Image (tube, rainbow, N blue to C red; front, side, top):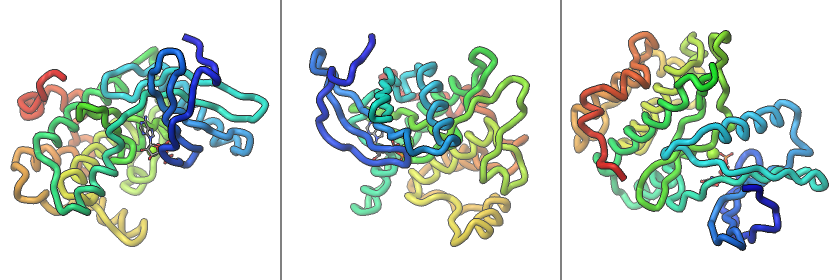
Length: 270
Ligand code: ADP
Ligand code: MG
């Protein structure tokens, strides 16, 4: 389906991000509700433009129930605006869920934590599989980039920082792993997933520091507090493995998907 700008009416502004603003829009003909990410590309430096092209190209190829679906892009040359049409996730993002819990002094149910873990492993399995000799690293897995549909299922989104790892290119680099003296690769996405799951349980990240140097030193010890006692030992054990400092010892997404504890916590098909 080819979309045109005037096929849509803008319903509301959802929020502003680093690249532009997100709007909730409705297709005037089909009444389908989508999200419009409007990006003013005219003023972007070449490097950011490149990042944008990456996000758009990546999303087009990725189809998975737990990855935010990309529909189309519309370029408006006159105004130098790019409109990216994506699936609307009515449940918002996990960063908001965490903030709400902190405010109301609540915690997130363990059952939901397992569901998030399971669904993100499944999404990452697709990213980390070779698609036309390329694998996709998300590189920015964090609560703000995981969205919720209306039924409490999660969808990984915001591939702005993702990069394709070509068959003949060993790795691309990202802050945390560089701080640990290792290359950013698929195992780094596993580590970030661990940080996200930990944050869902504890409502704060596993490593916290005033500056990047202190953070690097905390990360490299691999020591972090246990998740609160109302969460099971088996969840803690899975977290311990996701957050292993040594990449070789840390499981891959493919190890995780068939891990008996994870399999036993598969959510019922939704
Ligand atoms: P950023 O560059 O800050 O990551 P985003 O484009 O990811 O910007 O998000 C901007 C805002 O829009 C955030 O509040 C985010 O939760 C919301 N948002 C982004 N994508 C969607 C979506 N598909 N469905 C619902 N809300 C979204
Ligand atoms: Mg984001």
